[in-house]
Image (cartoon, rainbow, N blue to C red; front, side, top):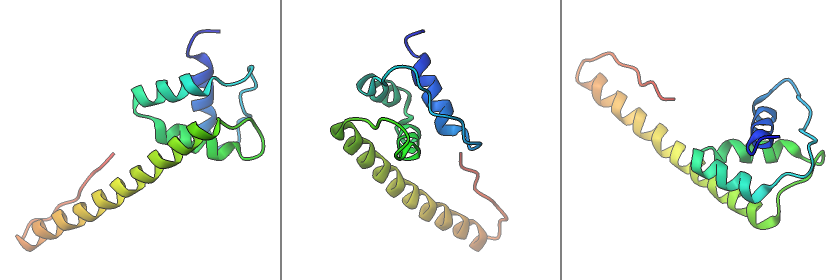
Length: 105
């Protein structure tokens, strides 16, 4: 198994809304998954997978779990701020007589 194959399987599990089973390859290397997810800017995705694990599978160690929770809350705050700013920008354009929409990804 390649260095990142388990990580990709976990990410697939996270993103699969059809109830894909938890990857059951050995134990997850949570420290390296966290490092990989941080490098790829997908910590929020990994956190969603950890939440989805529930009681089904092994969760990360407490320190990594708390880091993921903290990052997830920061992302939520940034998204709230971005949504607020989008509303403000659209209002400014509408007040100036322009039709517009904001696309965010």
